[in-house]
Image 1: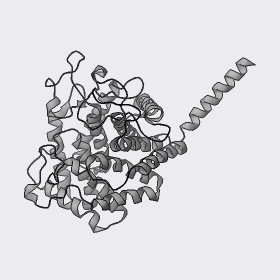
Image 2: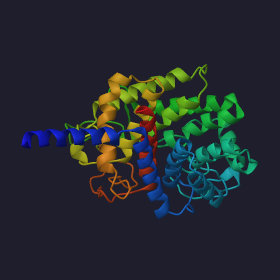
Image 3: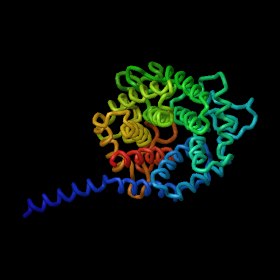
Image 4: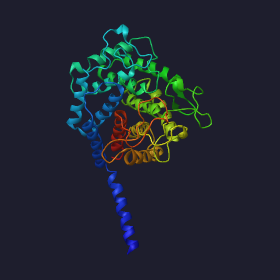
Length: 371
């Protein structure tokens, strides 16, 4: 009798596991997470990268669910920011070459990521004010001779996808040309062909910074995670016959391979990708971006479903059982930074808009993956 009870209990637990992986349950969890975030955070916040990254995730949740309140929340945010990023009017004062939160950093990608959401909202309702500033800034940038706009890895998520998104509206090939020109510059600076990973920026290119693991190379998980997520967004929108498409796909595949090799057995990626000892423990934002990118690649036939199934299974196990907290919050998000920093606390209460946004992106793709 005891053996039978044990077998029945085991069967019941297996059934619960199966039920928990249904598309409907995943979508319900997505809504729980998004509802938690929106009930605890005002939409009236600045359009800088930290908030805007959340709204790119919220947009995918709206696309998945059609829930009007998620759309209303995004519009409230966009209207609060007057459909702009940095607001400096004088083009002679527009800047990008250093980090900056001031209103003159109009060409700095951290102030441009909001344009991704504005473009999406414009596509839903063609109101000129939604696109006016985006067109002014991005068309100006596309016409400049400079190509060093994306000097740090994060910019390949913040700024790069805007060009292909805007192309889907304007069909101006100059946007695709500029995007490719700038990406090739960044790629030549930050991509490590041996490890198939991207450095965060030029300061960290080996041997300028070495890890505690045999003086090895230092790759920051969220930095490289931004890149795979940005490439997914670019490939999604770039025309099938575009001459640049194959290069983006090549880098996307190589980065997926490089990332998969250093995933931890528990499903997450440590802040220092090749040296967990540098900053040990769970981290959600980088993990979620890698999961999103790999899932998107599989869902769209670019990555092998068979090859990446173990990676996806382990990553979702982490995201759904460790990163996700019982109240719907997303924990273990490394705070704002630029490197694997062991001095910064990362625990179940460590939350941030970009971490929740990354989790939502990954979960939306997972809901499509399990069909």
